[in-house]
Length: 502
Figure 1 (cartoon, helix red, strand yellow):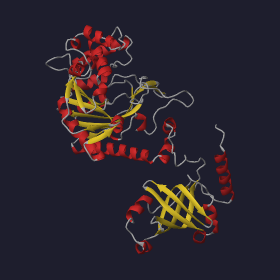
Figure 2 (cartoon, one colour):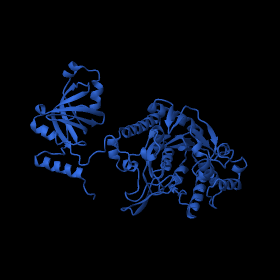
Figure 3 (cartoon, helix red, strand yellow):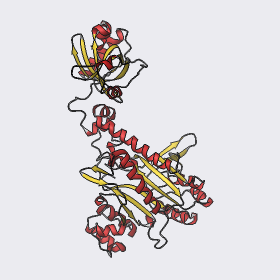
Figure 4 (cartoon, one colour):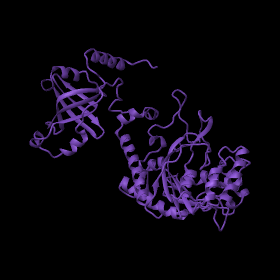
């Protein structure tokens, strides 16, 4: 336990004095009738006569400033809607209450009742007639002029970050608005929001390392879900033809500005549709959300202007490597050509990598970050897409796309493989790869295969990273900025990991 500072010791002494005087420094409730920010808006144009006739108010919030002047003092208190000034006079509240007020510190929570008036400077103010200490703060807030600027401290002590940095509060309000708009979009199109398990006896739905836990009563190992895909497709088998879930998923991966082991995804599935249909749907969804939240199709992101106005460009993976990655059409078609290109560009190549893996690794290293404006990339290797339907004209490629914005992969979608025989063959191949040491290969899921045997209609599904979308729409450089409580190393164990620690 850390040694208390002089500031904390002083506040602990005040706490003891309050208790000795019979004052409860942590009462259970307080009858709030109005919010400070709402009062300022409501009475913005009110003159003195109108304020004199206004009803009494009670407001509560955290004390952010104090100015004491003998037997009269000013303070600002802040609630969820904003801050409002209060004016406390000894002859209005009485000697006992005023003595209590003089022991208030910045950071304390205070409830007051009184009437509204406007000061000589024109500021709407509550002339206090009664006051109650609602919670004594034992730690001082960051300096109001400098705020809380240390990035790591901001992430570790988000509660202080929210107090000290109002833009952070607005960021998380915007995050909530983004999610609400997404819900509205899908609800309006007949999609049903569902909830699927977060603990799975068999992990599936993505190529990723899972977290493992244990159920004691059943003596059963369970995995935190890496994706809800297989359960959502079970829903479609059951007749829920349009479903979506805004879910928490977990992947046992490194930390970076783009990765957090616990993250939020939107996944949705639509029967009687393919990946082309979902490209069109995504071109409806994201511009609608961007306009509703940001007021325009065009947003700033890290010094660049990004337009979400549809339609968006479409490029195959191989086209992208030729146009943007510096490879020749001949190189992208053969394993030898890709291996030579990877080595020439300083990409470490594993002997086990074949054409498909080399193609994707070169794309990620050479091309990904160049997609500033929204761009669909299609035709990923079917070998690396074991749950996706292959193209009928060229089965080497999956009916799949990924959406890139500002160098970030924002969405991944494909036409779902609904042939249970082919799905079994693919999962058996994945099981062999896992047995050979591939920790990210898919598990065999017999119940999922059984579900497919009952019949999955033609279906397309898509996942969109909510955290990355929020990064874009709040001009945030790191995923930790948009997650209230990101995972961090324990204090004292060195700096946070970099983008290279994936």
